[in-house]
Length: 447
Image (cartoon, rainbow, N blue to C red; front, top):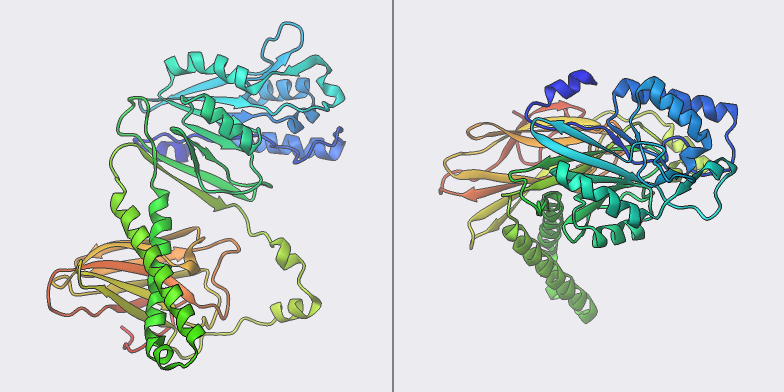
């Protein structure tokens, strides 16, 4: 882990935990098995050299003395701003930590949700009002830190209220059970990676100015807009192929549904383009991602019927003769944009890892960007890189449950180009790797 910190030159790499580290629910007691599991987690966090670990009400089942002793013995940075002794109201743990790395000072404080029915261990401590506490903590933090992060086990509604009251908080990382997109409130954002430790959140922040307010922008919205645009254009291309058949139909309801859907898609396309044009990539910005930590069966998979379970156990089928990939060009003559939608037909085998090269005439086309398709939307890694003039390299992998299963079809990627000449506008794919090494492209010879 220390080596990973050293690799991040010119940036800040912090490891944070928002709370509910040991127990998902407060049951009012802690047996030896649970205690052993908690100590194993603490030892692993020591190895990973965490920078701040917020405590939740459920974590206190271990007992405050035990947490204090383990924190001291293992050097673990437990924090809690509103957990105090009943008598003198002194914090039982550090109310906040300040980290200075590569010239940036980051202030991190933790808030614990108040509980109406506290367990017996709570007799010696008190959980203060989180809003009152935030006001007290932010005073010294504003003077010390250029970026302020709150680790919170409060409800989503209370986190929203916290950002409404205190504009100096840049990010609240919450313990929300639902994994949601970043939620902006005033100048700050609420982030969450879900529950049960299934995912790790990765927050990439780029600061070009430390002048407050930081005016952070979520650039992750660009990828979502491109994905929505890709789906709208793909569907419009499908409707365009059916247009003649619909016009010949004598069923007026069919024509009406066709016209309504096409109208809705055009409105969505125009809205996406408008929002993409308005995006400003300058200034302070961030991107929030979540990364699956392990392959876990979903609840839906666990409830499969006996018949479906037997079907799922059948041997994986090998790749069959294609075509497996189809390229659909979508041209906008007005703006001289040309988009190639690369679509997978029916997959002959599951795909966890893939790679291929894209060849085009650089005198006729200028590559401007890409958008993930629905099939790789949740891939752990997927990217398009420019190798040289007239050549792109596409690749990705998924170690979790979001791989492309057998028999699936849909959009893999959308490649955007600007038409700069009147030469060859064709796109060719080749050098297929990994799980698609034997696949073929419709209407194209294998390179």
